Length: 611
Image (cartoon, rainbow, N blue to C red; front, top):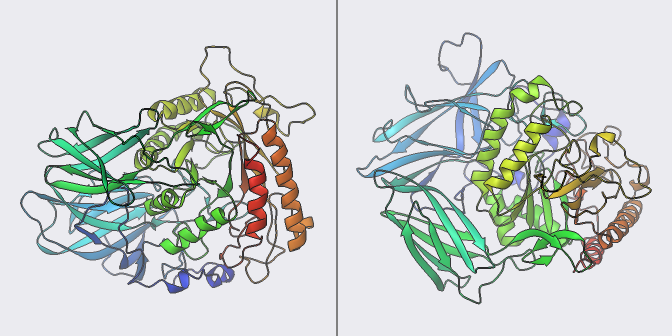
């Protein structure tokens, strides 16, 4: 088993993790937004080995054991549980069967590999440049490297975790506080698919409910990239409701029927479509929704969903699992988390410093839950935004941010990007503004959260009367009229809170984190009660009665703030994570600490204030 994690960690399993086998581990098509017929799942048992970074003569000649892909080597579900060090290479290998055909291409897809990846077919390296970035998917065309029959696929991965310019989210060499066990190597699905010589690499679907249409743009590959693309759109009953045909570079604009249905958390209506590009064909879906900001009848600047004022209420969702770490144990496990939030009356989650598998976002689309998507941060002190190291990592940060947006652009449930959290890996004023301005320009279909919780130079951090600032660094006034403030929300973090920045005419007042009520549940702790903590304390919430009373008291205050112009709130958090015990659920998801009906009633009391 190699170097095992702590006994408590190794012992904690979810119900879904207990059922994982090499035969059933992540078997479904990994990209529901763009589905093709001819594909091969490469999850399952691979061979693994570790060598020293220093003077490694070549690939391993002997392998140390078996690992279950797509679970990271540090996780329980990988079957290994070994911590990878920055001075080590992590190697993977397995056999793949290919059948190259004239006029066809074979694509090798990686959902996510942390961090630097070199890929080989036999002796030949397929990665012209090693892929860097542990958060986003990447694809290699291996057609010219494979032969008919069996081929040897090998990966060499290097993961520095904290010691480089990479985004690492909450991974740490020394898990404590709000940082968790590190994740290295493959941690999302690996798969192959066969495509036509001319094929669509990616697409964007942008709905416009005011015009009653959806615009598609396509990135095409092949010798004839300007062939027309045909789109047929179907409703939930499978009836064709629209069709369009146009040239790929110009995109396709589909006019929807007059009675088209809107997408919302309350009514998550989706439309499916079939796209044809020569011999290439795939299935996808989209939702007709609009997320914007505007003034309500009382003059407060608020979030609007489908042209109506809408209070967004959700949780900080870390997306970590005791058995899979960053990798959920199964589709059912992901759906359970989302359904729990729905049952408790939340309409949103803030996906905190993590990128999920694409099937996760498809569940949010189908089940109806708004997503605020964070960009995972890198290493560095939040106290000093002008450190040289922060500036050095800015180029790779922007590259990974752009890749994240490209990958998730057509996900209906994502309504706002969160480029920075609490100053982590955040550069100085000029580079921060440049990032926010880029995000808003690159995706005008969504809103952009200002730096969440700290170091916001965009303006609008005015305090209501009687509220004392906990940190003077967050206080800035608006820029002069006509000068760009490249964000749509002004975001306060306060534990326990709640509280809000003063309402203004340029950015929605938003409570991006609060609460964090600690409550230990014996038998479901990563460590002992003594070693656990809550953001908002633990003393008066040790009992279920005390926890519920305190939580409802916080929600009464949020309801009052909503009446005064607060646009939304994010409670910390969905689940316990390692030694954090702030969750609605325990880390193993086996205990819900609250009565969901009670929470739902409290949350409806808040959302009903905004009309």
